[in-house]
Length: 400
Image (cartoon, rainbow, N blue to C red; front, top):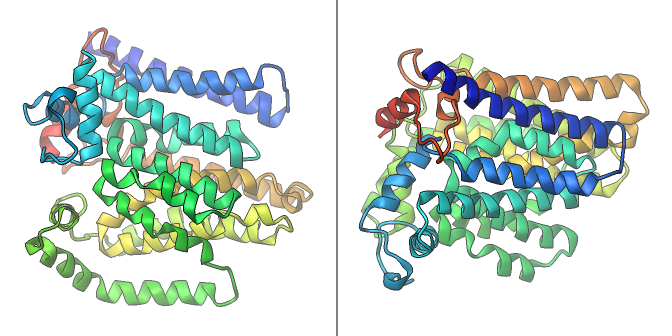
Protein backbone atom coordinates (compact mmCIF):
# COMPACT_ATOMS: atom_id res chain seq x y z
CA UNK A 1 0.00 0.00 0.00
CA UNK A 2 2.85 2.39 0.88
CA UNK A 3 4.68 1.52 -2.35
CA UNK A 4 1.52 2.15 -4.36
CA UNK A 5 1.06 5.52 -2.62
CA UNK A 6 4.64 6.53 -3.44
CA UNK A 7 4.23 5.48 -7.06
CA UNK A 8 1.03 7.50 -7.46
CA UNK A 9 2.55 10.48 -5.66
CA UNK A 10 5.60 10.47 -7.88
CA UNK A 11 3.44 9.98 -10.98
CA UNK A 12 1.62 13.28 -10.37
CA UNK A 13 4.88 15.22 -10.18
CA UNK A 14 6.36 13.44 -13.20
CA UNK A 15 3.19 14.12 -15.19
CA UNK A 16 3.42 17.82 -14.31
CA UNK A 17 7.08 17.90 -15.33
CA UNK A 18 6.34 16.26 -18.69
CA UNK A 19 3.41 18.59 -19.39
CA UNK A 20 5.35 21.76 -18.59
CA UNK A 21 8.37 20.54 -20.56
CA UNK A 22 6.15 19.89 -23.58
CA UNK A 23 4.68 23.40 -23.32
CA UNK A 24 8.19 24.85 -23.19
CA UNK A 25 9.20 22.91 -26.30
CA UNK A 26 6.03 23.66 -28.29
CA UNK A 27 5.64 27.37 -27.49
CA UNK A 28 9.12 28.66 -26.59
CA UNK A 29 11.33 26.48 -28.76
CA UNK A 30 9.09 25.83 -31.79
CA UNK A 31 7.16 29.12 -31.43
CA UNK A 32 3.71 27.63 -32.04
CA UNK A 33 0.87 30.01 -31.21
CA UNK A 34 -2.29 27.87 -31.27
CA UNK A 35 -3.91 27.60 -27.80
CA UNK A 36 -0.88 29.30 -26.25
CA UNK A 37 -2.86 31.43 -23.82
CA UNK A 38 -5.16 28.52 -23.01
CA UNK A 39 -2.29 26.29 -21.95
CA UNK A 40 -0.61 29.08 -19.99
CA UNK A 41 -3.78 29.62 -17.96
CA UNK A 42 -4.42 25.87 -17.71
CA UNK A 43 -0.94 25.18 -16.36
CA UNK A 44 -1.51 27.81 -13.66
CA UNK A 45 -4.87 26.25 -12.73
CA UNK A 46 -3.34 22.77 -12.54
CA UNK A 47 -0.57 23.89 -10.20
CA UNK A 48 -3.18 25.62 -8.02
CA UNK A 49 -5.32 22.47 -7.88
CA UNK A 50 -2.40 20.20 -7.01
CA UNK A 51 -1.28 22.55 -4.24
CA UNK A 52 -4.82 23.12 -2.97
CA UNK A 53 -5.88 19.47 -2.80
CA UNK A 54 -2.73 18.19 -1.03
CA UNK A 55 -2.91 16.60 2.39
CA UNK A 56 -0.06 16.97 4.92
CA UNK A 57 2.53 17.55 2.19
CA UNK A 58 5.28 19.91 3.35
CA UNK A 59 6.63 20.28 6.88
CA UNK A 60 5.38 23.86 7.27
CA UNK A 61 1.99 22.76 5.97
CA UNK A 62 1.67 20.30 8.85
CA UNK A 63 2.55 23.06 11.33
CA UNK A 64 0.06 25.45 9.73
CA UNK A 65 -2.64 22.77 9.92
CA UNK A 66 -2.08 22.51 13.67
CA UNK A 67 -2.35 26.28 14.07
CA UNK A 68 -5.55 26.30 12.01
CA UNK A 69 -7.11 23.67 14.25
CA UNK A 70 -6.11 25.46 17.46
CA UNK A 71 -8.65 27.57 19.40
CA UNK A 72 -6.34 30.61 19.09
CA UNK A 73 -7.32 31.12 15.44
CA UNK A 74 -10.89 32.54 15.38
CA UNK A 75 -13.62 32.56 12.77
CA UNK A 76 -14.43 35.81 11.00
CA UNK A 77 -17.21 36.51 13.51
CA UNK A 78 -14.65 36.69 16.33
CA UNK A 79 -11.80 38.16 14.31
CA UNK A 80 -10.39 41.64 14.92
CA UNK A 81 -7.44 43.29 13.20
CA UNK A 82 -6.38 44.59 16.61
CA UNK A 83 -6.52 41.15 18.20
CA UNK A 84 -3.52 39.15 19.44
CA UNK A 85 -3.72 35.64 18.04
CA UNK A 86 -0.08 34.65 18.23
CA UNK A 87 0.43 35.00 14.49
CA UNK A 88 0.70 37.53 11.67
CA UNK A 89 -2.67 39.23 11.40
CA UNK A 90 -3.03 38.82 7.62
CA UNK A 91 -2.39 35.09 7.87
CA UNK A 92 -4.83 34.75 10.78
CA UNK A 93 -7.44 36.57 8.67
CA UNK A 94 -7.05 34.03 5.85
CA UNK A 95 -7.48 31.19 8.35
CA UNK A 96 -10.51 32.92 9.87
CA UNK A 97 -12.05 33.25 6.41
CA UNK A 98 -11.48 29.53 5.76
CA UNK A 99 -13.13 28.60 9.05
CA UNK A 100 -16.11 30.85 8.35
CA UNK A 101 -16.89 29.41 4.92
CA UNK A 102 -16.99 25.95 6.45
CA UNK A 103 -13.85 24.65 4.78
CA UNK A 104 -10.97 22.84 6.36
CA UNK A 105 -7.34 23.78 6.03
CA UNK A 106 -7.53 22.91 2.33
CA UNK A 107 -9.44 26.20 1.91
CA UNK A 108 -6.39 28.04 3.27
CA UNK A 109 -4.23 26.04 0.86
CA UNK A 110 -6.42 27.06 -2.08
CA UNK A 111 -6.46 30.74 -1.13
CA UNK A 112 -2.68 30.72 -0.72
CA UNK A 113 -2.09 28.77 -3.95
CA UNK A 114 -4.33 31.11 -5.96
CA UNK A 115 -2.62 34.26 -4.68
CA UNK A 116 0.91 32.93 -5.18
CA UNK A 117 0.58 31.12 -8.50
CA UNK A 118 -1.50 33.83 -10.17
CA UNK A 119 1.02 36.48 -9.08
CA UNK A 120 4.02 34.48 -10.31
CA UNK A 121 2.40 33.55 -13.64
CA UNK A 122 1.25 37.16 -14.16
CA UNK A 123 4.69 38.59 -13.41
CA UNK A 124 6.44 36.03 -15.64
CA UNK A 125 4.04 36.72 -18.51
CA UNK A 126 4.81 40.43 -18.35
CA UNK A 127 8.59 40.17 -18.12
CA UNK A 128 9.90 36.89 -19.52
CA UNK A 129 10.68 36.41 -23.24
CA UNK A 130 10.12 32.67 -22.74
CA UNK A 131 7.22 32.35 -20.29
CA UNK A 132 6.80 28.58 -20.58
CA UNK A 133 10.49 28.04 -19.89
CA UNK A 134 10.08 30.32 -16.86
CA UNK A 135 7.12 28.40 -15.41
CA UNK A 136 8.97 25.12 -15.98
CA UNK A 137 11.94 26.46 -14.01
CA UNK A 138 9.57 27.86 -11.38
CA UNK A 139 8.04 24.42 -10.98
CA UNK A 140 11.45 22.80 -10.56
CA UNK A 141 13.04 25.51 -8.42
CA UNK A 142 10.42 27.11 -6.19
CA UNK A 143 6.82 25.95 -6.66
CA UNK A 144 7.26 23.26 -4.01
CA UNK A 145 8.72 25.70 -1.52
CA UNK A 146 6.28 28.54 -2.24
CA UNK A 147 3.16 26.36 -1.99
CA UNK A 148 4.11 23.59 0.45
CA UNK A 149 6.57 25.25 2.85
CA UNK A 150 6.96 29.05 2.94
CA UNK A 151 3.22 29.59 2.60
CA UNK A 152 3.05 32.91 4.44
CA UNK A 153 6.28 34.31 3.03
CA UNK A 154 5.29 33.43 -0.53
CA UNK A 155 2.09 35.48 -0.15
CA UNK A 156 4.32 38.39 0.83
CA UNK A 157 6.42 37.67 -2.25
CA UNK A 158 3.26 37.69 -4.38
CA UNK A 159 2.44 41.21 -3.18
CA UNK A 160 6.06 42.18 -3.78
CA UNK A 161 5.94 40.97 -7.40
CA UNK A 162 2.69 42.87 -7.92
CA UNK A 163 4.32 46.01 -6.54
CA UNK A 164 7.63 45.51 -8.32
CA UNK A 165 5.86 45.51 -11.68
CA UNK A 166 4.70 49.08 -11.02
CA UNK A 167 8.24 50.08 -10.13
CA UNK A 168 9.71 48.46 -13.27
CA UNK A 169 7.10 49.40 -15.86
CA UNK A 170 5.93 52.78 -14.55
CA UNK A 171 8.77 53.81 -12.23
CA UNK A 172 6.03 54.60 -9.72
CA UNK A 173 7.12 54.50 -6.11
CA UNK A 174 3.63 55.51 -5.03
CA UNK A 175 2.01 52.52 -6.74
CA UNK A 176 4.75 50.28 -5.37
CA UNK A 177 3.92 51.11 -1.75
CA UNK A 178 0.16 51.05 -2.37
CA UNK A 179 0.57 47.49 -3.62
CA UNK A 180 3.25 46.11 -1.30
CA UNK A 181 2.03 47.09 2.18
CA UNK A 182 -0.01 43.87 2.77
CA UNK A 183 3.25 41.87 2.51
CA UNK A 184 4.15 42.70 6.11
CA UNK A 185 0.69 41.72 7.39
CA UNK A 186 1.01 38.11 6.23
CA UNK A 187 4.65 37.49 7.12
CA UNK A 188 6.56 39.62 9.60
CA UNK A 189 9.75 39.69 7.55
CA UNK A 190 7.72 41.08 4.66
CA UNK A 191 8.71 44.49 6.01
CA UNK A 192 11.97 44.13 4.03
CA UNK A 193 9.99 44.87 0.88
CA UNK A 194 9.65 48.46 2.11
CA UNK A 195 13.38 49.02 1.47
CA UNK A 196 13.64 46.88 -1.68
CA UNK A 197 13.05 49.85 -4.05
CA UNK A 198 16.63 50.86 -3.25
CA UNK A 199 17.83 47.76 -5.11
CA UNK A 200 17.11 49.31 -8.50
CA UNK A 201 19.88 51.85 -7.88
CA UNK A 202 22.57 49.16 -7.75
CA UNK A 203 24.70 49.54 -10.88
CA UNK A 204 27.21 47.35 -12.69
CA UNK A 205 30.65 48.92 -13.08
CA UNK A 206 34.30 47.85 -13.13
CA UNK A 207 34.50 48.11 -9.35
CA UNK A 208 31.59 45.73 -8.70
CA UNK A 209 33.70 42.51 -8.46
CA UNK A 210 36.06 44.24 -6.02
CA UNK A 211 33.14 45.50 -3.94
CA UNK A 212 31.62 42.00 -3.75
CA UNK A 213 34.95 40.42 -2.73
CA UNK A 214 35.52 43.09 -0.06
CA UNK A 215 31.92 42.71 1.16
CA UNK A 216 32.42 38.96 1.42
CA UNK A 217 35.68 39.35 3.35
CA UNK A 218 34.28 41.93 5.77
CA UNK A 219 31.10 40.01 6.46
CA UNK A 220 32.92 36.72 7.05
CA UNK A 221 34.92 38.62 9.66
CA UNK A 222 31.94 40.16 11.49
CA UNK A 223 29.30 37.47 10.93
CA UNK A 224 29.51 36.23 14.53
CA UNK A 225 29.10 39.79 15.81
CA UNK A 226 25.93 40.26 13.71
CA UNK A 227 24.54 36.99 15.03
CA UNK A 228 25.10 38.14 18.62
CA UNK A 229 23.45 41.49 17.87
CA UNK A 230 20.33 39.76 16.55
CA UNK A 231 20.22 37.45 19.57
CA UNK A 232 20.56 40.57 21.74
CA UNK A 233 17.33 41.90 20.20
CA UNK A 234 15.40 39.32 22.23
CA UNK A 235 14.79 41.83 25.02
CA UNK A 236 13.12 44.27 22.66
CA UNK A 237 9.32 44.45 22.59
CA UNK A 238 9.11 43.67 18.91
CA UNK A 239 7.59 40.82 16.93
CA UNK A 240 10.33 41.23 14.33
CA UNK A 241 13.03 41.01 17.00
CA UNK A 242 11.37 37.98 18.59
CA UNK A 243 11.11 36.11 15.31
CA UNK A 244 14.63 37.03 14.27
CA UNK A 245 15.92 35.63 17.56
CA UNK A 246 13.87 32.46 17.11
CA UNK A 247 15.38 31.91 13.66
CA UNK A 248 18.93 32.67 14.82
CA UNK A 249 18.66 30.20 17.70
CA UNK A 250 17.14 27.43 15.57
CA UNK A 251 19.08 24.44 14.24
CA UNK A 252 18.25 25.31 10.63
CA UNK A 253 18.72 29.10 10.52
CA UNK A 254 21.04 29.56 13.49
CA UNK A 255 24.81 29.85 13.72
CA UNK A 256 26.51 28.73 10.52
CA UNK A 257 28.45 25.49 10.52
CA UNK A 258 29.51 25.62 6.88
CA UNK A 259 32.89 24.11 6.13
CA UNK A 260 35.21 25.41 3.44
CA UNK A 261 33.69 22.79 1.14
CA UNK A 262 30.21 24.10 2.00
CA UNK A 263 31.25 27.67 1.24
CA UNK A 264 32.85 26.57 -2.03
CA UNK A 265 29.62 24.75 -2.90
CA UNK A 266 27.61 27.94 -2.37
CA UNK A 267 30.02 29.92 -4.54
CA UNK A 268 29.86 27.37 -7.36
CA UNK A 269 26.13 26.67 -7.21
CA UNK A 270 24.76 30.14 -6.40
CA UNK A 271 27.27 32.92 -7.03
CA UNK A 272 29.03 31.86 -10.26
CA UNK A 273 25.74 31.31 -12.17
CA UNK A 274 24.56 34.78 -11.08
CA UNK A 275 27.83 36.35 -12.23
CA UNK A 276 27.39 34.65 -15.59
CA UNK A 277 23.82 35.92 -15.97
CA UNK A 278 24.88 39.44 -15.02
CA UNK A 279 27.69 39.34 -17.60
CA UNK A 280 25.43 38.09 -20.41
CA UNK A 281 22.61 40.55 -19.73
CA UNK A 282 24.94 43.51 -19.21
CA UNK A 283 26.52 42.89 -22.62
CA UNK A 284 23.17 43.20 -24.38
CA UNK A 285 22.26 46.50 -26.01
CA UNK A 286 18.58 46.27 -25.06
CA UNK A 287 18.01 48.13 -21.80
CA UNK A 288 15.12 45.81 -20.87
CA UNK A 289 17.61 42.95 -20.54
CA UNK A 290 19.31 44.84 -17.74
CA UNK A 291 16.16 45.27 -15.62
CA UNK A 292 16.84 42.41 -13.24
CA UNK A 293 20.62 42.79 -12.95
CA UNK A 294 20.39 44.75 -9.65
CA UNK A 295 18.29 41.92 -8.20
CA UNK A 296 20.86 39.33 -9.29
CA UNK A 297 23.55 41.38 -7.56
CA UNK A 298 21.40 41.53 -4.44
CA UNK A 299 20.95 37.75 -4.70
CA UNK A 300 24.75 37.37 -4.61
CA UNK A 301 24.97 39.60 -1.53
CA UNK A 302 22.29 37.53 0.21
CA UNK A 303 24.24 34.34 -0.53
CA UNK A 304 27.34 35.91 1.03
CA UNK A 305 25.37 36.95 4.10
CA UNK A 306 23.94 33.45 4.36
CA UNK A 307 27.46 31.96 4.70
CA UNK A 308 27.80 33.32 8.24
CA UNK A 309 24.15 33.82 9.23
CA UNK A 310 21.89 31.13 7.71
CA UNK A 311 18.74 33.18 8.42
CA UNK A 312 19.52 35.12 5.23
CA UNK A 313 18.72 31.91 3.36
CA UNK A 314 15.08 32.98 3.73
CA UNK A 315 15.65 36.01 1.53
CA UNK A 316 16.63 33.85 -1.46
CA UNK A 317 12.91 33.40 -1.98
CA UNK A 318 12.33 37.07 -2.79
CA UNK A 319 14.75 37.02 -5.75
CA UNK A 320 14.19 33.56 -7.23
CA UNK A 321 11.49 34.64 -9.71
CA UNK A 322 13.75 37.45 -10.98
CA UNK A 323 16.60 34.95 -11.34
CA UNK A 324 14.36 32.60 -13.33
CA UNK A 325 13.31 35.41 -15.67
CA UNK A 326 16.97 36.41 -16.08
CA UNK A 327 17.73 32.81 -17.12
CA UNK A 328 15.11 33.02 -19.86
CA UNK A 329 16.55 36.37 -20.96
CA UNK A 330 20.08 34.93 -21.08
CA UNK A 331 19.13 32.47 -23.84
CA UNK A 332 17.06 35.07 -25.69
CA UNK A 333 19.33 38.10 -26.03
CA UNK A 334 20.63 38.76 -29.52
CA UNK A 335 24.37 38.53 -28.87
CA UNK A 336 23.85 35.03 -27.38
CA UNK A 337 21.49 33.74 -30.08
CA UNK A 338 23.84 34.90 -32.86
CA UNK A 339 26.83 32.96 -31.53
CA UNK A 340 26.70 29.18 -31.22
CA UNK A 341 29.34 29.06 -28.49
CA UNK A 342 27.48 31.60 -26.35
CA UNK A 343 24.18 29.79 -26.94
CA UNK A 344 25.68 26.46 -25.89
CA UNK A 345 27.30 28.00 -22.82
CA UNK A 346 24.02 29.62 -21.77
CA UNK A 347 22.13 26.33 -21.95
CA UNK A 348 24.94 24.48 -20.17
CA UNK A 349 24.78 26.99 -17.33
CA UNK A 350 21.00 26.61 -17.06
CA UNK A 351 21.24 22.80 -17.09
CA UNK A 352 23.92 23.04 -14.41
CA UNK A 353 21.59 25.10 -12.23
CA UNK A 354 18.78 22.58 -12.78
CA UNK A 355 21.18 19.78 -11.81
CA UNK A 356 22.20 21.60 -8.62
CA UNK A 357 18.58 22.18 -7.58
CA UNK A 358 17.72 18.54 -8.29
CA UNK A 359 20.73 17.36 -6.30
CA UNK A 360 19.72 19.57 -3.36
CA UNK A 361 16.42 17.66 -3.15
CA UNK A 362 18.35 14.42 -2.50
CA UNK A 363 20.51 15.78 0.34
CA UNK A 364 19.91 14.48 3.88
CA UNK A 365 18.28 17.01 6.21
CA UNK A 366 18.91 15.13 9.45
CA UNK A 367 21.84 13.37 11.09
CA UNK A 368 20.96 10.15 9.28
CA UNK A 369 20.41 9.46 5.60
CA UNK A 370 16.84 8.34 6.27
CA UNK A 371 15.25 11.75 5.73
CA UNK A 372 16.02 13.64 2.52
CA UNK A 373 14.72 17.01 1.35
CA UNK A 374 12.38 15.41 -1.19
CA UNK A 375 10.64 13.57 1.67
CA UNK A 376 8.97 16.90 2.42
CA UNK A 377 6.97 16.56 -0.81
CA UNK A 378 7.01 12.89 -1.85
CA UNK A 379 4.72 11.08 -2.05
CA UNK A 380 1.90 13.46 -2.93
CA UNK A 381 -1.22 12.78 -0.85
CA UNK A 382 -4.61 14.38 -1.40
CA UNK A 383 -7.50 15.36 0.83
CA UNK A 384 -9.57 12.70 -0.93
CA UNK A 385 -7.55 9.79 0.48
CA UNK A 386 -5.98 11.58 3.47
CA UNK A 387 -2.99 9.25 3.50
CA UNK A 388 0.19 10.64 4.96
CA UNK A 389 3.88 10.06 4.51
CA UNK A 390 5.80 8.59 7.46
CA UNK A 391 9.02 10.31 6.36
CA UNK A 392 7.31 13.72 6.26
CA UNK A 393 5.85 13.14 9.73
CA UNK A 394 9.30 12.14 10.98
CA UNK A 395 10.77 15.32 9.50
CA UNK A 396 8.07 17.42 11.14
CA UNK A 397 8.78 15.91 14.57
CA UNK A 398 12.55 16.26 14.07
CA UNK A 399 12.47 19.99 13.28
CA UNK A 400 9.95 20.99 15.96
